[in-house]
Length: 241
Length: 346
Image 1 (cartoon, each protein chain N blue to C red):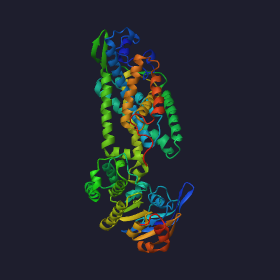
Image 2 (tube, rainbow over the protein chains, first blue to last red; image 1 turned 120 degrees about the horizontal axis):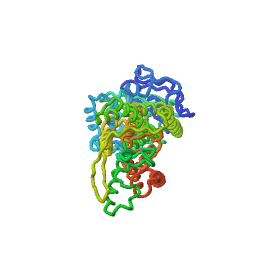
Image 3 (cartoon, rainbow over the protein chains, first blue to last red; image 1 turned 180 degrees about the vertical axis):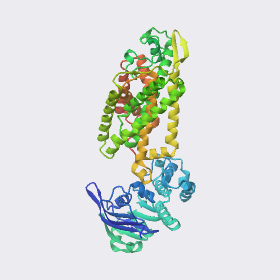
């Protein structure tokens, strides 16, 4: 049984249909990448899994349970966390307060050790813990957003374009962190990216989303060498390595 | 009780009705007699007005917190908030009347009991208002909850008028007495016990409230909902409950203000919420709507401005002073003294 299974998901934003019957599965312990151009429906897909907006048709199963109509609170309580588009850190709160917010659903007994783990992963956050999160640089904000999501020890971590607008060195560091999380903690990861090269390299499996539909799927390596993917997302685009 | 005593307690005659509009006049030998005072009394007169202004400002500040918190979290001006405060005053009147009918004489215990009762029942009103008038409109265009709020305000006024009658409700003075701080040239600067009670209670509440918002996990959740409700819900925060709690806290603070005003002036009627609400709203805008320290500061300033304007210019036009400030702030400094500018870095 896959950890997450989307069956024929249709989602609308007002009258605009953003997803047109999408099927995606994520197995326990995998890194699954979803690539696609701007407006392909990648972010909508992640938000639909969390129940905001709702899928108008189709079914979302998480660990065998139907969560298509479940309240957001129930979905996130199952261990689904998201690093959303634009990071959405609480900019007027301190770095530490952001991490505390991330621990809302976590076990209070783990709080201290989880906090130390985050500071071990990104020591800059420890240095800046009393600083307002809005004063961090883009890369630091991304680190904070990832750590905030990790504070509740999610079973499925979904990341929406974590590399957007970051310097190449930081991008490398972020992708390395994603891989480490998957290898060392066994966190299942669903990654959405425009930066196809890095995202496909770390992925076990990947999907290409185009105009709200799954266009291609396969292993990360397969898609990396797929001529269509190369033309559309690697060589032609400005996201080439 | 003699009328003079009553005036000493806070005044309920002539232009000091409706009660909240009236200013505390104790210590002024003749209200229009400033010109007759000798030069040496100028400072004493000023000092007295500062004391009166601080008292009034404390009340405005407590009410203003409710406006600013609700605005912060759902981006709407809760125009029924003045009515919530009025209901707090009425519960105080009812509770004081019941207590005196029961023959309970212990003043401090009585005040605590009345405060608790008013806070509890008013908080229930605050919760119910959000539930009935605003929650069903979550996600609707901004104008809809605003109209709903105005409707709720009219409804509550008329409901209280129907249930309690339109006449002014007096209570016997609860706390008497004062300190004479200064005495000069026939002018006495007085700090009444009730003024001390109001200012101290306000200071304690504001410290406690600031602690709640800045240091506790509830406060963090409250602030997170204020900044990004969707993100907060994705992290597992119960947004609806946090919004309810915001209304309950705002109502509780307004209830305390209502109890204190009732004790200060000795009278309430069903209409006091409108003007007090507008003044507190002005205070919240002056301080910067959405900013909690701003609401406290704005409340104090509006209280002081009103007291000083009444003392040195015209008591009849003191509302003009407050509302001119509202207009000026909205025109030239819309984010207020401590507010954030609307434009944020993206």
